[in-house]
Length: 246
Image (cartoon, rainbow, N blue to C red; front, top):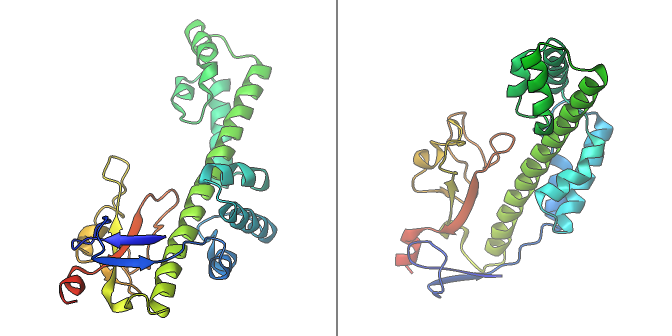
């Protein structure tokens, strides 16, 4: 893929700066990265689960799967965390005690809202089989949520590392000077942006060198992801000064 940049460092149809690079998530370097570092943020899994999940994430990336597809593949190999299992138990307790808070749980199956509301309004207790069904759906949706979090986060980790390898290879081959390349951190500007990620672009307004670390509220880091489901991305571009000096 030939990536071209204008003098402001943005992608453009200009030949002011062009590099012929190939993105390959199945490269040996990326495969090694996945084997060594992927799933680092995943808690409460066994070594066997970690090996299986690593293989699934690596295979999904090599096949060009999106994170949701990866999540679907890894779901059978994970379990709930202690906190998630506790949330399932709490949901059962709310249903059994006719507590209206049961209707506020984000992962509940909304198809059962009417049944819960009728029980609340009439002061009757839900049938035991109905409670079992609702709790089973809550547990399954919790498991799906965890799988999607792992799929999104680890796919992003691997893709960001692939990008770093790509530009380093371009520099090593002499296609571009590594000293000309800077990395810029971007966040999603909405109500979901976390307080850790939000200030990072402002803490690194001029970007950082190709192999340098970003300053963050929790200390220097190589790049995203900062936490599970992190939506931050890093773009590598030629530094503005280098364009005007050529």
